[in-house]
Image (cartoon, rainbow, N blue to C red; front, side):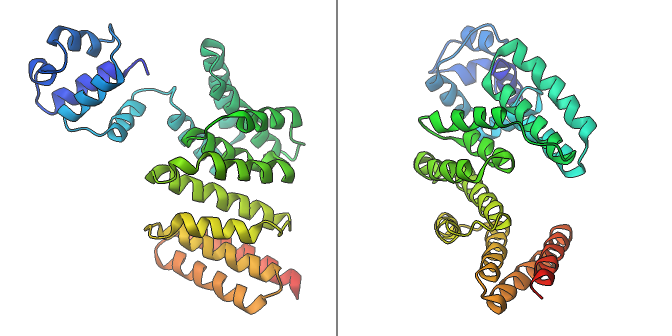
Length: 287
């Protein structure tokens, strides 16, 4: 993150603190000045101590840093999400060009992963077959990671749609094992729940019901005692779909209806309408 010095300087000045006040007891004012100008690196311990001095959390710092560069993964995910929701193939191709350029300059694997996801999504939108070689590339990367953090969870979540049932099932077990030690982190626990719900939805659409009950229990466990209204309501909808597919029609329909009603009540009309259409189509096929 080459811009951390200038970002720190911006935040320090916004707090009305001088170089001397900030550096006192930690490093020299001259070294802090060089760091802020991007001329010197700094140890992790000193960096965290400096953030504490100016009363800024690391998550807040990252938000400011992300706003100043287009190379961050968060920026990519934001642009990807907009193109995905609008089914904008032109924008997706523009993102492929930018991510390919970043990969050529840095050789960082995440830029290559982003290109794969973008190409697979274009294939999905244009009814073309998925590239299995590319799918296998991300599958093996995730399988071979010793630990999963936020990046790996997001990568898996965004790759589910072009992987095989066997690959998704294997990576779901891997996610549960390797991301477990970080699930107490607010960001990771929410992301983990959303990814597993994507897996549940994927399995339900494929009528692959065998692992669904245990996955629902896993998400219930992660969300217990947490105030994630949307996540819990979305899970209740999936529980309803599962029960319908398991021939518990009335119980399942009641769960789905209540989840849709709550989404509509709290302003998520677009999502409520999509789910209502999906539910109606499913029930229509059962008549």
